[in-house]
Length: 237
Ligand code: IPE
Ligand code: IPE
Ligand code: MG
Image (cartoon, rainbow, N blue to C red; front, top):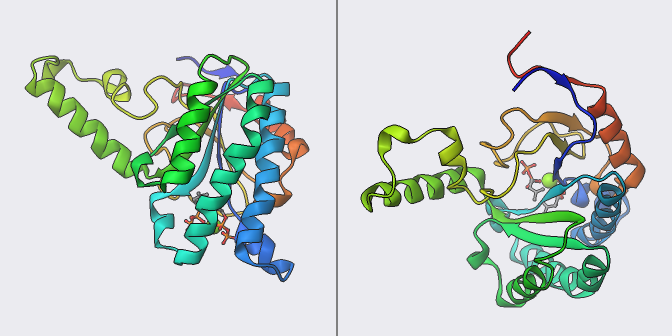
């Protein structure tokens, strides 16, 4: 890797935060904030296609989000199912390939069924790969990767002395995906919240003060513009 000015990010990852505060500021219920957030998802997908971004990973539900009140968790699962049902034809029309990372077997059967169906139906699409992080936790992903490495060693498929960062990356959920170049978090919070810890090692960070439902295509394009002016140095001079 050498230090370089980069143009368009190949992979953008987004921590979509602030739905609850958006709803509260309008005197609405939290789930209504999540519902409004779905429109921003649509906007950033369109923005990525326009800007020729190849991969978009959206943090939609964390492992820790299961600890929220049951009513909110249920509403989020319902909204996920509805989103997939409603947007699946649009994803197909826009040539978007859907994938998912996380502990998917934790999801309720309704959204899980829709998810698997849309992933299957869009598997050959080529404009944009949209990756939903669902019941996702980066530390859990790393443990999963370690177990997978240990199993390869036990089966004699891997010599422990040849393990390196490239091989380890191939044991993560993101094995087939290049690392994110740009990580966006909305709602002004400056933390990672257990998202893609391994993969964001050299990502550029962009914190937006917009709450997620207010984050629109122009805000994404602004983040891409900001990224294109940065100098990535990868530890060099
Ligand atoms: C992000 O919005 C959506 C999820 C985490 C599912 P929040 O629900 O975290 O909204 P705030 O942070 O409470 O405003
Ligand atoms: C991170 O947001 C998870 C998602 C966006 C899905 P949270 O709102 O759950 O994170 P914290 O609690 O502020 O760290
Ligand atoms: Mg939040």
